[in-house]
Image (tube, chains in turn blue, cyan):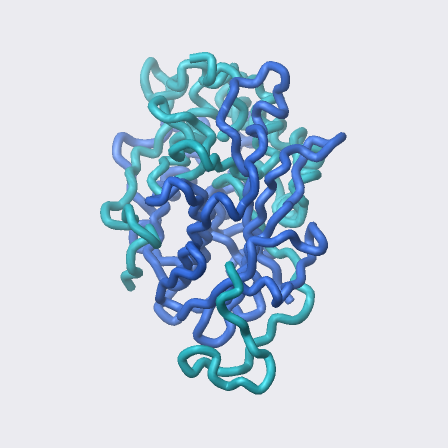
Length: 227
Length: 194
């Protein structure tokens, strides 16, 4: 009984926010706001010499727009673990802010300050793109607009599993909670030459000298910031 | 494969200029009222999928996680994450065993608490797969949920709680990506459907 009670209390804490769209229905301070990140992807796309970043935010209907006061900031660490610490700090940022019918992109550039507060250096404006369209400027591909949510996860089954635990687990077939959903997405495909030299993979850094020898890799994350 | 044994972790070009002043035709008749001024303050952040919502136990922790810079992630959240996973196992009367990557719980949760995504410029992307080099990014097609479940509940074979031998299935939600939601060409996501 004690275990069940413990699990139930965990479930209460988890079930509302767990896992959804990787980051959907986030912490209460940001959930259901225009700053709530749904998902973040970073991968090698069609151009092997570029890296593609995808950031999505929930879009409940066809009228959902990017907030003109919410900066989307992709952070890139290309120097690895900070000396004397176990963490990393951004060396470059790519910033996106909608104004009117366009999304404006800045960078990649080294920000004047790091951390929780950001400003936009307008000298670093790289491109703008009409919402719903794509463009290529200086070898960088840009898109901003509504897209299908490609995330896939049986969120209801997950909730059932954790709320009833010890439970029978997931079934043999699942139901994708996100199949009918849409997002507002920005997609940026950037030549690697603009991102600097990638550092030793962070796993190898943290496990040195016993790391597995993974490929060099940038450390990346996305933030939303409101003014 | 040795590589799996050690792995941590699930783990410009100024072609345009914007006038903020009196130019009322910034390309295509867009309104001139662009405003890039001010200080923007952090609201949300994300590196790898699902970290905050799964591993932080309280709403206060979730809020804090979103405004903790990656430089402080491990120091702030590793103990919390470890306790969370231990609590999950307690519900099944079991204890964590090193996962398919050979990671013990402190090492796994150290990796999870530094919530940044690694993406390699020199290798095809794989969040984790037997075929590709893992931890080289996150592609749209990657089944990050199953990977996460396997790393958490799969034990050293990846199949510890797989629904067989009297165990519940905790290692796959048995959902595949919806057909037609991504493509191989930019912008890689397909048109919205309302």
